[in-house]
Amino acid sequence: MNADKTVALSDYERRVHAEMLDSFDEELEMEIDDDRMNELIAEATTAASTSADLERHFYFKELFRLQGELVKLQDWVVHNKLKVVVLFEGRDAAGKGGVIKRITQRLNPRVCRVAALPAPSERERTQWYFQRYVSHLPAAGEMVLFDRSWYNRAGVEKVMGFCDEDEYEEFFRTVPEFEKMLLRSGIILLKYWFSITDDEQELRFKMRIHDPLKQWKLSPMDMESRRRWEDYTKAKETMLERTHIPEAPWWIIEAVDKKKARLNCIHHLLSQVPYAEIERDEVVLPERVHNPDYLRNPVPAEMFVPAVY
Image (cartoon, rainbow, N blue to C red):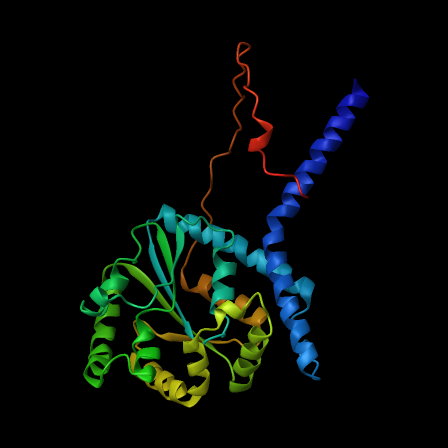
């Protein structure tokens, strides 16, 4: 009996261990994806591009620690019914999506959600410019991460000619008042710009061209943005100059090193929203009800997905 119990316990422990490992595998999968990119870079360059990278063990340890703090922040936001908006802006391939993935990875998608709006429809083009963004703003107890935001007008729309000069100037007149209005309504607003160099964007684009799993990230608009690097630089400088206001300042993330950018951004985000750990009631798993007259119906074999693995 004791031997059976030991075997059962050992099997249970193995299952618990496997479950814990599985909870970390999503990050490992993303890091493997980064490693594939590094291998492509190594094939294309002779520079030791990883020499300045964070030591891998430290990166994972610190990322998991920060993600644990993000869970505490999430609980604080829900408990205190806060409304948090975070804007992520930057050039194509600057690493915004990678940071957003690491922020949302351990959080409840009902609390922390991502807004990544497509190009406006014909109807939306006739609306007040900010109208389509307003519908994505958070209610109490929510965080919204904008993967690109209303600042599209100051960037891609200006450079690509999707807005005229009057609309462009009206944006700059309106956006400070719009953001102050959000703040007065109780929204916590953070604005991040991810900064990479000319050479780094060119390298990342080339890697995506040669990576079949990431070619989908390159659109004709991305290609045109590469050609117009200097135009985007001028637009960015104007945007930062005219919209960096005391109430809603811009924060610049140096993003050439992706791992450092992720850690620095999450660390800074946590520092901008004062929070404390919310004490939870102890969770007790209830005993399952067993009905002796219950018989489980068999499932037809053809309904099962083939066990290829």
